[in-house]
Each structure stands twice: as C-alpha cells, then as structure tokens.
Image (cartoon, rainbow, N blue to C red; front, top):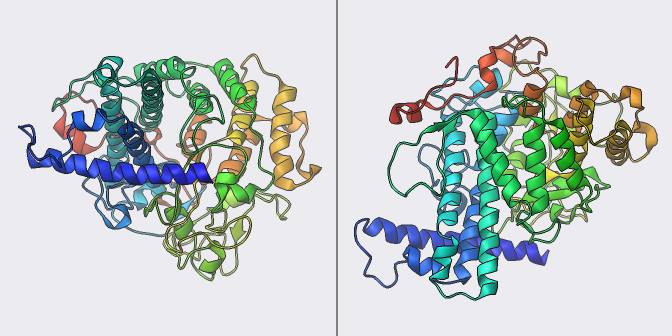
Length: 531
C-alpha cells in the first residue's frame, strides 16, 4: 500500500509541475522567460528530483486526461475530461463494437461503435486517435530530454544517471504500448519518434508491417534494461510488462500482416508465467477497491478517490454499470450512471448455474434480450467492477473509486500460451496449455468442477474462455478479429450492424479510419480502405 500511495503523490506533483511548465511556455513562445517563477525545460531537467515527476506525468497520460482533475479541461480539445480519458476511449473502441458490452447513452455518434457503422468523422474515434498520439508525444519529449549527452550536462552522480536511464526505458515501453494500440486499431499511421525535431511538421505515414517491426524492435531492445518482474514501484512497468506486450504482438502478427509468430508468442508468454506471479483465488478481488493487493496483476493503472480522480478509467466502468434497481452502496458508490450492460450472446458463454464465479450479472428487473439499446433494463447488468474492498467497506470516495485498472494479467499469459500452442507454435506443449487453462478454471469454480479434458481444449474454447476471464478489460475486439469473427456474418450478436437481431458487417470495420481532421491536415496520409 505504501508504494501505491507514493506513486499517487508523485503523479499529483507531476501534474502541478507540468501545469507550471505549460503556463511558462504559453506566456512567451519566442523568448527565454525572465520570470524566475517560470519553469523552462532546462530548469526542470537540471533538478534530478523532477525526473520521476515528469515520468509520472507520462504514466498519468493513461490515467487522467487533464491537469486539473475531473472538473478541469481535457489536455485535448473536442471532448470533456471524461469522454476524453485514454482507457475510457479504449473501452469504447474495444468493447462496444463486440458481443460483450452495450451502452445506454446516445451522446453524439457514440452509438456508431455498437452498431458498427462508424465513419472517419466520428468524434469518439478521433478522440482515441488523438489520445494515442498525445501520449506518444509525451513519451517522445521525455525520451528526447533524457539522452546520455543531455543528462551529462547537469552534473548528476552515476547512480542518478542510472536511475534516469531506467526512467527513459520505461518511457520507451509506454510509447511502444501506445504505438501498439495505433497498430492494432488504425494500422498505418503517422510516425514520429524522439529523433524528430520539435516543431510543426507533417509526419510521414508508416505502414502497418513497418510499425509492427518498430514496436517489436523497441521491446526487444529494452526488455533486459527494465527492472526485473515484481521489483518496480507499484503502478510502473517492468520486464514482465514488456513480455506481455511482445506476446500480444506476436499472437496477432498474422492480422498485422507479418505471418505466424506463435512460437514467439509462446516464448514471451512463458517468460511471464515463469516470473513468479500466481493467480488470485478470488476473481472479484482483482476488480475491487483494494485490488493493488490482488495476485496475478502484472501492471495496473492506479486510481485513488482522493489523489487520482477522473470521469474515465474505473470510475467510468463502475459508475456506468450501475442502474435500474441496483443499490449503488453495494458497489461503493453514491449513484449510478445507468449505462453499461452485457449482450445476451456473451451471457450465454457461462453455464446456466452459478458454478463459474466469473459469471457476475445482475438480473433483477433486467431482460437478457436487448430490444432497446438505450433502456438500461434491457440486457443483464454486470457486477464485476466495484469500489468495495475485499475486506469489506467502501473505497475512500463515493464518486471516484480507488479501484485500479488492470492492463496486464497472468491469466492472459496463460491463455495466450494455450492459444499459440493450439495454433502450431513450437516450444510449448498441449499438456502445459491444458494445465494453465485448468488452473484458471480451478480459481473460477473453486473446485475441479470446471476442469476440461485435452479433447475439449480447442481454439473456439480458448476464445470463449478469454471472454469469460477477460471481459470488459479491453481485449474483445482484437480477439474476435484474430479469429475472423468480428466482421462478416460468421458470428452475429445483437445490434451488430445496427439491427437488433444483428447482421453481417463490412470487413473494413476491422480497422478504424484515420480521422477526417488529420486526413485534411496532413497530405502525407492515405486513408484506410473503404472509408
């Protein structure tokens, strides 16, 4: 708990520092500020104590969307602080177009996600795209300011230089994560790194395959330079995070035009598996207000109802899942937003009884069928995420939860390993894959009742097990695309294609379009096919 609080305080200090720096820059863009209270780049980076604060701001780009908390302005124009937060935008893009979630709000063009009929003018797609590249720009600037040559000018000790080099490596990992999101969701995108000069210019577009190569090369270069698994400060990434991202990259390599890399997916998922993590006995604990104490979470975005507030992140998920006759107090909040529910096709992936403890639905007053997507009582509500502690009692704030948002989990490494083995990767074994899947199911059922045989371990089973284990964690769109089931008519769910019964959809929707705003501003860009 102490390490979690420490990083919260660092994030808060970073936001204040960055706000002062931005204010100083805005006062005069063309001259060196004379006011001693104005922070310049040199003033910031000449003080060793500021490096952790600026790194915290880079991490905070995943957690919050502005400098002033939930009642301030977004770093990006166009959407408010809540809609404009990174992981909330990511949830919309990865979950709403799938069989796992539906949202009962009709804001702007938000419904286009769940109807799978979006265009390049969709403001929520523009926000996801902008948030990715804003995050990349934060990483680029920190990496640019922490080269060996620049750090040498400040007279730091060797130990301080080593620490700064570690911070720089983590920023490279954060940049690789966001470029992976761009690769997965948009394909071929504008490409800028720390090697590009600061200033206005029109970035060139990188192909999807070349971007794959870049992300892969960055991760391979930094994996040995990061801290060992389970040794870093809570809320920061380490070697296991890089391995998780590599495994995910390789598992989807065929989709990204790079051919099968399932052997590599086995290699890196096994590195995570062998790193000393173990699964949480209580599935629900990983999504509660004290989940920083849960087992099996490799990297999470930390939240705190007092120190780290946003209308996105877990605040959005927990508040939006509560409505109807649900009692907000049972979720550690003071009210609900009447938004998120599960689609019936996802509900049916669980057994009819309650033997699988991951089956976390609220059904009183709810219909499984969704005749009206904007009626909260249509569709089972989900109770997976709460602001309640595993020891009892609510989090510190009834509006903004303490619940951290898991990004990488051990169970995903188990499932990636199993899928890569079934897809023909070498270096693993079916018996090990079966053991890993059955370990997940042992925790889920609390007994051997959920165990499967080797004959039942199929790719289709793995896809359904990923849904049961990882739902509402931002995996589903990518998983369905990898299985060839996201677009077309091979798998239909309610409201796919904007029709209640669901219809086949165009293959172009496997990629989001580059937003019109960027297409109009940068003649170097070529739009994704079909838009």
